[in-house]
Length: 257
Image (cartoon, rainbow, N blue to C red):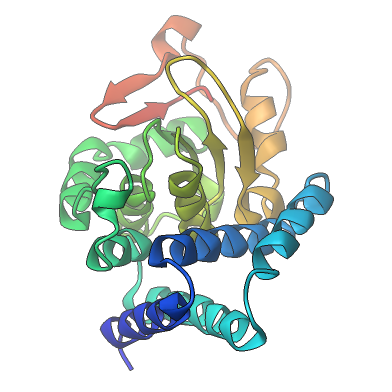
C-alpha cells in the first residue's frame, strides 16, 4: 500500500466517525487526542492536565469510534512511513473541505513550501559546520508544512535533522498548532510548538516534540545562549550583532537561538 491509499484510509475513518458528530468536531478531537498521546510520552510536567483533556474528548465517543481514531492515527503514521515528508494533515484538511469552517484559512500547497525551503536553506550546511546546528522558525505555522519542507530539504542533503535542526512553530489557532505538533513529532523533528499570538507575545500552550526531549534540545539551546561556556557543539565567534536572526519568507533561521 502506498501513501495515497493510507491517506484515503485516514479520511475514511474520520468520515465514518462523523455519522453521529459534526466532521469539524471529529477533526478537532482527532488532532487533539493525537497531540496529547504523543506529548504524554515525554512531557511529564503537563501530563496530568493533558490526560484529563484526553479523557474529556474520548468520553464523547463510543468504543468503535475510538477504535477508528486509533486506526486513523495508524494510517497517518503509514503515510509518512511510505511517502516520506509531506503535509498530510494539511492536505487531508483541505480534501475534507474544512477550510471554510476554519475562519477561511487555507494551507499553502506543499510543493510551494518545498521550493521555498530549497531557496532559503541553501547555506544550511555551511551554517551547521560553523555553528553546530540551525534553528528554524515559522511564526504562522498552519499545519507545519514550511517546517516539514525544511526538514525534508536537510534530509536530502544528508543532514541528520534530529541532531542538526531545531524548529520553533507558533500559531494563534490551537488546532493548527496541534496539527503541526503531531506531524513534526511523527517525522522525528525536534521542535517547540506554541499556541499563541506572535505579535502580542501571548502564549497559551507549549508543546515539546519527542525528538526535542530525547535529543536534549532544551540543554543544547540553553548552551547556545551562553557562548562563553564550554560545550561539545561548536558555535560561532562572530559578534552578537552578526548573529541576529535572518528573516526569509515565512522562515527565520537563527544562528543564535
